[in-house]
Amino acid sequence: MNSMRGLCAIRGNLAFAPAPGALTTIADGYILTRDGIVEGVFNRLPPHCQAEVINYGDSIITPAFTDMHLHAPQFPMLGLGMDLQLLDWLNVYTFPMEARFGNLEYAKTVYRQLAKELIRRGTTRVCAFSSLHREATHVLMEQLEKAGVTGYVGKVNMDRNSSPELMETTEESLAETRRFIQECNVYPHLKPIITPRFTPSCTDTLLEGLGKLAEEFPEVPIQSHLSENPDEIAWVRDLHPDCQEYWQTYHKFGLWKRGTIMAHCVHSSPEERAAMKEHGIWAVHCPDSNTNVASGIAPLRRMLEEGLQVGLGSDIAGGAKLSMPDVATEAIRVSKLRWLLSGKEEAFLTVREAFYLITTAGQAYFGAKPGFGQGEPLHAVVFNDSRFAYNPAITLEERLERILYLGDKATISAVYSAGRLVEI
Ligand code: GUN
Ligand code: FE
Image (cartoon, protein in one colour):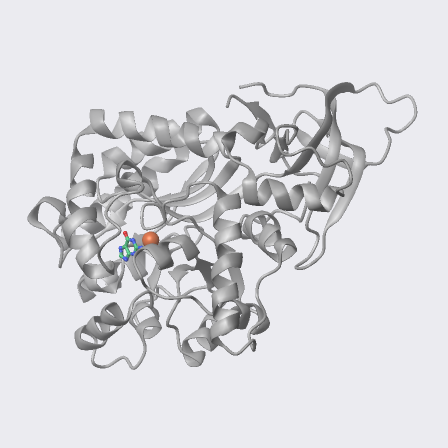
């Protein structure tokens, strides 16, 4: 890992999304950094600039990607077990997989590989679920930190409706979460996040206790799942007859707060979406997962039009694509199906919008400005697209489109995370 001391000018074709549907491209431009902090973006270097130039030639440089929802302990089942819907999928494949993370050696092997694969794919910020194991969650954070991945990591809470190998008592769950939060100050680039798996996995006492923890640690955000699958929603209704809607099961325990992240929202009602908007909740759209475990197609266009804060997530291993460009193009594909199914009412997602969601929108969750924000540590990806079909007539914007659709880790030649050049 290279900490980029002094003044550096990173040279190449720059592309970023200043707003939804907008794209800025700068041919042969420069990102000027001092000690890894962005000083500005330029068409040409200021006169007499003493910066060390790092020249990426004809490559395209974009902001690095944010994966707003992934399950780290599901990495070993990536690309497996897609024949069941959510509740059976959890019981048959997922819970047995996560139970293995009681073994710290196993956890280290998996998490070292995952952290490296995230960086190789240009993902430098994550909102990650670990398993319920506190110690393995620290192993995950150590490996993410080592590879250069930043963001939020949650020790999962679950004290009911799982298998005996993957269950905590309520007291254990709360005590381990408190301890976990208090232990996290050792990580320079990672923070804890309160992570009730979803309502059916948590007793009322646990949810209530987590709500109190959230109040006690107001800087620690909350993440969970919401309205992913119709059977799940019906189950939540049975478990909480006093709540008309799923979101209220989080709200009544103080877990529905500004900055709370809710994955999926595929079947959220207009009222549930209005409650998200009113309370500043983030919806994370996970299109590949929603297709794989046959949950449905989330009404992304409606969420965007209603002004919800939306990001994208890989949701591995419901999702089988770890690369955020793959998730972005999957979001476009499923939005086209919704467009057709809606009689062309709900406009499909554009490439510019999808690019915005995996860069600017995700960055915003972390308080970062669009693009390569001045005064902020650099997060950037360098793409060398020279191996794609020879086509000198295409524009920078078209090259970006092609990178999103065809690119894989082999297209990425350098990654900057939190002001450091990281090893890929
Ligand atoms: N709901 C509760 N747990 C999970 C999970 O691990 N993956 C997905 N996709 N949904 C969930
Ligand atoms: Fe998930």
